[in-house]
Length: 219
Image 1: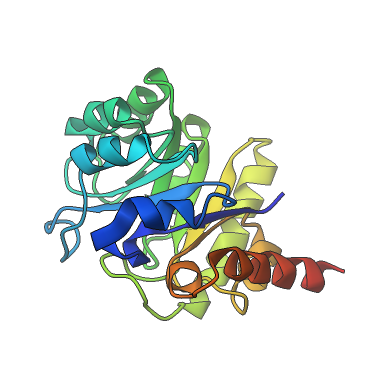
Image 2 (image 1 turned 90 degrees about the vertical axis):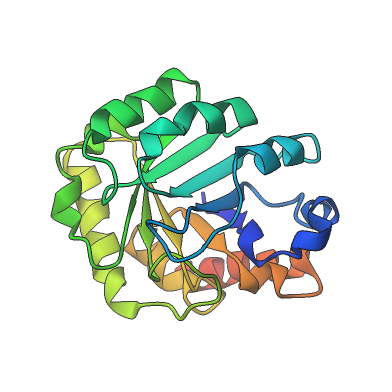
C-alpha cells in the first residue's frame, strides 16, 4: 500500500492549523526539522510540533536533519512524534539512537542523503523500521528530483528483501505525479510530497493525482 506524507515545509507557516485541515486525508504528516548546522536552514522544533499535535490525528513523521540527533530524540517523542528518522551521516552511534526511538514508542527511521551509498545501511537495517531516501539534497523545499537516486532505492529494496526484513522505504524530494511511479517501481511505499500537495489549491486532488499516477503505471 502506498502512503502519502505531505511535507509541512511547503505549507503557509502563518496559518499552519488551517493548513493541517486541508490534508486530513493524507496518511502521515511529514515534519522537516532543520538546525542550520547539518543543513543550511532553520525550520521547526519540538515546541511547535507539540502545539500542532492537538490540531490533527495524522501520525507525525519527524525527519531530523540535525547534528547530534540523539540529544533531542526524547524531546520529539514528548512532542508527539510517531515516526522519527535520523541521518546516518550525523549519528556515530546509530543503533543506540534507533533503539531510543523504538523504546519511546515511535517507529525508527534512517535517513540517507543522495550521495551516501546504500552499503552504509547494511549494519543498521535490523535496527530500523524504515529508510528515508533523499532524492534531493536536504535543507530546502522545492528542489528538482535527482534521477540517479532511483537505482539506489532499488538497491536498498533488494537488501531489505534479501534479509527478510519488514523495513519500508520512504522517499523525500521532488515527488509528484511524474516522479512517484518511478520511486514506487523501485520499491518505495511512503511518498513525501511538499509543493506537489501544499502548492496546489485542492490538496485532496493533488494527493489523488499522485496515487492515481502510481496506480495507472501498475496496471
